[in-house]
Image (tube, rainbow, N blue to C red):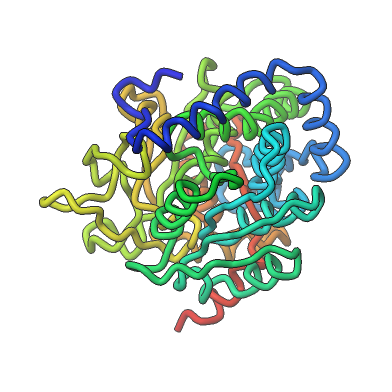
Length: 383
């Protein structure tokens, strides 16, 4: 896949060889009808797809702008979009006769999804998770353990998603039986391509559903971005359509404070986790710590396709602060009876901001990428 100057495989030679094996297997699998049918079977019968596209009538009235639709990825088994990709990659690992799945997780949703699928297929599972994210996401930590996976606490650095990815790559290099199941559209090729392939079902369903309900395409689509898997999943089927596309990063305590997770705003290109992309980088070239109230957004980079879509101007990338996301979280709870993940709350907040730019018979689709029960403790701890 061509992402202009972005992407690539900036990794040691022995890791390149492992990546080439995965790429070969992936390319063969997606041409194999038996593989595709098995994937689609589990998506429907186990994950619960298709997820609904819900017209948020109360939120629409409150905002008094375009019609707002929510793509309900929170209704998937395990409560987020992450399981779409976890299922696909575990099926690839099985084809390769790998006996040990490893994964990183920040918000815990990818960890839960991976542990769930490993339980289903009776495969050994180890989840790398930063100490700070373990503290923030106790409910998901307990779910992962209940599902039979082992959690490896990562204590280096800030103890968040970046460090968890670092440790997982180190483990992969040393262990022949391991398959690294990356949860976002990041990392060295072929991971961004694989994650996109297994998440594009979101956009494919959404396009059919909005045409059924509105008899036309939306005017805009919106999704939050950490690494960027839920967003690339939604965007892919709309890239070549006349639709405004918005990606929303975490502005944390405010862009001016430096305590944020907006790698695109930071506007520095560098190498992170084997890919070339926009990263949080200081003047000396060191990776800066990302910050967001949302554990799933505090990653100091973005997937290479997002970097490319920003550079060519196809997608408008912006950001939302913790405060704005919290307000949107509470608003959706009260108006629609839906508790969104803090990640998704960033996209809701941005949609509220832009809805009046459009006509009342236009529609905006927000990817509600996950549910918010994992974030209740974070909300309660805010003074």
